[in-house]
Image (cartoon, rainbow, N blue to C red; front, side, top):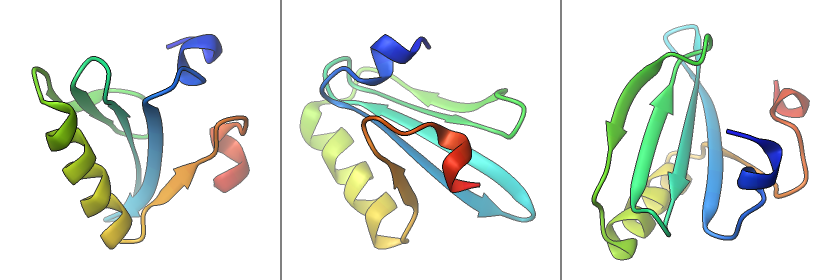
Length: 80
């Protein structure tokens, strides 16, 4: 995904460490997708065809578990 696409409204990036692995999730309310990647950017899970409400619910779950949301203008490596 290019930088210009990541600043599009509705796209959020979340990162966390689980079992000594850095994982990243990208949620997109506009397209109704959630994608989860490992530290090598291999896709672990992708869900498509979700409603905006379903994506919002998943984002709230991410926030509940205190995953780090990357800001609109920041690079992912600043959080690692």
